[in-house]
Image (cartoon, rainbow, N blue to C red; front, top):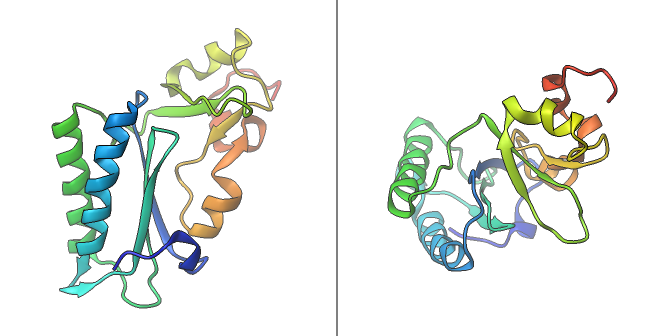
Length: 168
């Protein structure tokens, strides 16, 4: 059952899948339609899940489940991974690469860039990233964390551990 995000409990589980390259507006619109269809039908042990989700910044596919009604299980998680793999194959994109991070150098423009975690130190030392650059924490576990800790300054994120410099 698909519900608006604001109707989900703050403890709702969340999964964030990040495209390593920006999606076109057309890709985002098509993927959004498929995402909504998946979320409307997503079940756990043949019981409908209370779900929500969307595409953010033409880069992030977000799925949430309010487990007050029905908990996710291994089979339902497998279904979601198969859905993500299907999207990757259909659209020629990468959504499961956890060795990339995304950042927003200028929050006023809402432009989001992606890079390999291996390049984070180089980007920082070249000045493309600063201590206050917004990075996306795709490891948040709940709706509440998504709303408060998904976009954080580099110097307050787990990403900073990939910096060789202790300046941050």
